[in-house]
Image (cartoon, rainbow, N blue to C red):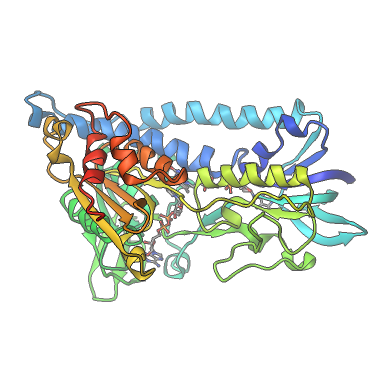
Length: 463
Ligand SMILES: Cc1cc2nc3c(=O)[nH]c(=O)nc-3n(C[C@H](O)[C@H](O)[C@H](O)COP(=O)(O)OP(=O)(O)OC[C@H]3O[C@@H](n4cnc5c(N)ncnc54)[C@H](O)[C@@H]3O)c2cc1C
Ligand SMILES: NC(=O)c1ccc[n+]([C@@H]2O[C@H](COP(=O)([O-])OP(=O)(O)OC[C@H]3O[C@@H](n4cnc5c(N)ncnc54)[C@H](O)[C@@H]3O)[C@@H](O)[C@H]2O)c1
């Protein structure tokens, strides 16, 4: 059956939020070949942080003795935690699906894989795996990304897990190997270890989170070694399944690690390669991202791209920002002279591990490579009163500012509440507030933890 719409939306993550009330006069086709609601809701940000919260509580209990509180961590009710998390998530997904399927008069939902099939006159022709055909004046590609599985694992036939299914394990595994050393590896290592699994994390390079500022990556790797078995500089050459059902990773140096569950967390690949984009002459870059300009326009007139499928930042808040920008640009029109550009100047991120990490702006290496004359200050939590209360010995806030302008250019925090502490820095950088004004132009609540950021700013030698 062929249907004609104003706008086709590929993907029900950001694609679903695109079709908001501002577009009640626009007819949409919304395509989703997986679970309704996309990565963040179903298998990403939201459920992971619900597990992280439980893991944080378990760690608090373990650490209670340091504060003179007598408590013992006995065990975690893994099936109970899984149920609690997905009893909240699954109804959100199915409720969103029902809303689009039955109560959105201007949106038609296609629960099927869709690809481009060139053009039909001025419209784009989209064909689903169920043989539905949609002709659309404009298309928003918001098809997201998927886990990358290294060949050595994929070709071995071994049972492996990804973020898509590891949160639904029936039982907490006794031993888990995590292949990869980025965001997902760091967060799941915390979750499973804190709840009772013996975790081994395998990195190709010399440290974990190696794209972070090196002081952060070094400290994180140091603390990780105290909690998990950390194997750095390991090249995986085999992944056999053993007779007892456990999984082995063989390394190039002749060593190996065995576990009950293998979790692969080695990056995510954009889904643009599944869209037959060559039929509309839209290209992918070397990292597999849909090519587009800073307004979200691809090389095919009327076809826009946003979120993980096209962005160098695979983050929900970036996908949200890009959705708002493309919504505005669709309203203004393809050829408008006042199109809104994406603002990727100060994209923050947080790793919800143990410890937590938050970052915005340049790392020290990036600042040096850019030839910027900068001042840097590393402020330990243990220098402020709240850090004393926490008996903290490892956490810190690192700030970088440009001497010429007195502006912050990078902030990196490792320690409790990092993802909250960083927000004033994001605000200052986004609105161009100078370090001096930020530090002295406002009150900082005493003796709250943000004093660590205040002191870091005051410690910058800008003159
Ligand atoms: C484990 C994990 C934890 C994360 N935690 C965080 C976090 O704490 N904070 C944060 O900011 N970000 C986090 N992220 C990243 C965040 O989830 C993504 O950046 C965000 O979800 C991207 O949204 P999107 O709309 O671009 O894509 P998605 O939400 O992935 O939506 C794309 C949808 O398109 C569908 N699709 C793809 N191709 C087709 C096709 N051809 N036909 C039909 N449907 C198709 C897919 O099934 C998918 O549902 C996390 C990611 C993971 C994996
Ligand atoms: N809290 C958050 O905001 C959050 C949480 C999870 C994921 N995410 C997003 O999702 C993206 C994907 O997460 P991720 O952790 O999969 O990717 P990542 O890019 O953060 O890390 C992937 C890691 O895997 C390593 N790697 C790649 N191939 C390997 C191989 N063959 N063997 C061993 N190691 C290998 C890389 O060196 C890298 O360290 C992140 O970059 C992030 O943007 C965000």
